[in-house]
Image 1 (cartoon, rainbow, N blue to C red):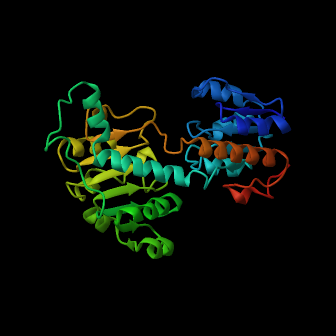
Image 2 (image 1 turned 90 degrees about the vertical axis):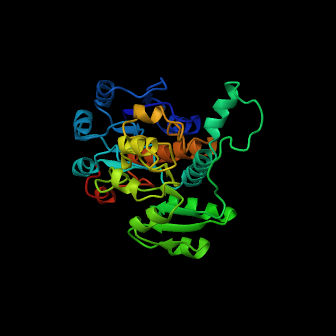
Image 3 (image 1 turned 135 degrees about the vertical axis):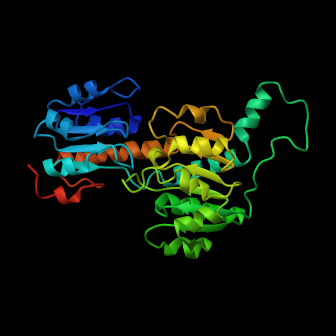
Length: 327
């Protein structure tokens, strides 16, 4: 079978692949393949292990050919995959859910504290040799303990972020299409409309999938519904935030600050955001812990191996394909 891995993943996943498919090929450079390179490597594939940065669409699947059985995405999200095109062609699509929940929630809290307490800004000040002694007005920031935390999207990660607030005595609000009884019981969270959440929260943490309905749902209008003293944190998907509108809001004091791990046009970041001190930016590293990435690699490899063996992958996204198009 012809198998391709689009970028190096942790060795534990590669070793699993070697045991069952020792002749698989891989992009050995730690960089994203160009579109032309990806299409060329797709020719004749039986299985593909892709990353979130790889566009997996009908064109690529047709280039691969009708023998393509599975695309194992090394990510919990799969908005890089045209799921309808895959289902139409009988291609199994898998992801790596669950394993990055705590790492992403922890990173959310790291960003929250970093922007509220102005950590990157003050460290840069110190490293530049500008610290001449303590001052009562130097780098004043926002309080966290006892404040209101708004969770937009109360799925696995939003739930984990909410439960980690217990140590800080925070009031928790959440907005979601469905109620989450668990966080209501665990932290006394209250389900409210998005408008109410934005109006009341001191910290707004976004944890929604990228859908047509969530693209740019944080925009000029929603930002103006937030408190001027509030902070926005996004560790979900970049395009849910209109970066131009956010930059304008940060520059004009519409909100106090923001912290982003994901971006609208990755790896590019809106140039106006790069100029601002009241925004913390990290390069899509919310799941970047040794344990988490090892688990993701293991899960992606096991999904690929199962699909190629004619077995139902453990984390099949388009389950309607199973049984209909197996060779």
